[in-house]
Every structure is written in structure tokens, then in C-alpha cells.
Length: 116
Image 1 (spheres, helix red, strand yellow):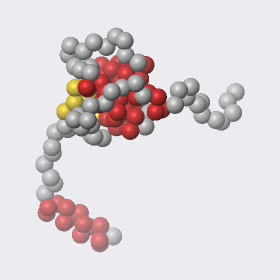
Image 2: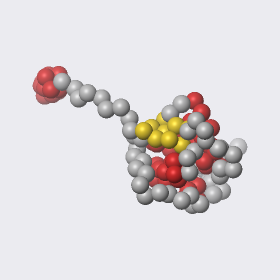
Image 3: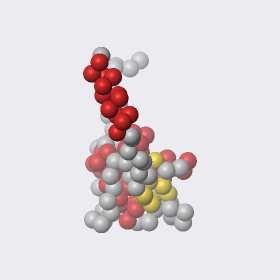
């Protein structure tokens, strides 16, 4: 029987990235796509890093998606990703830039919303 309380973490969130050296030149944003480097040495990683690497085994995910799957705050996963990119375990790329929607369609939608 549960008391309605959520289970508390044994280790606080900020400790997930505590031992990582985060390079300053690596830019990781919310929509940055993350994937495992082909020649990455994944043994010897701390538990959050190994969970992240196993999560990315199926393909690239954004940093926000990784945070949601891991149950960690975005800022912690951002540091974790940057540290693992600096160590050569992960690679990142910016998401593809999509074309902006046609201005005429946006004006039609806006006029339709005003009519409501």
C-alpha cells in the first residue's frame, strides 16, 4: 500500500553531474540533438551517464527528451550532455531548420480566430 507520496531520490539531482568537467566551448540547448559517438568508450561511466547512453541506443533525442526520460531537470541533463560530449562519448548537432510557414496562411488563421 502506498501513502500517496512520491519516492524520493537517494542521490540529489545536482549530484548527477557533479564529477563532470564541462567544457565552456560546447553549446548545448534544449533542442540540441544528442547521439552516441560511434567509437565511444561507455564502460566506466557514472550511472546517470550510462543511463543516458543506453537511452540514446535507439537513436538521437533532444536534450529535453533526454531529461524527460531520465526524470532529471533540464539543467542537470544539459551539464551531463556537455560533459560527455567533452569526453568524446556523445556527439551533438543542431536540429534541422524548418521553413517558416507561409504568411498568408498565418493571416487566414488569425482572421479565423478573430471571427470566433
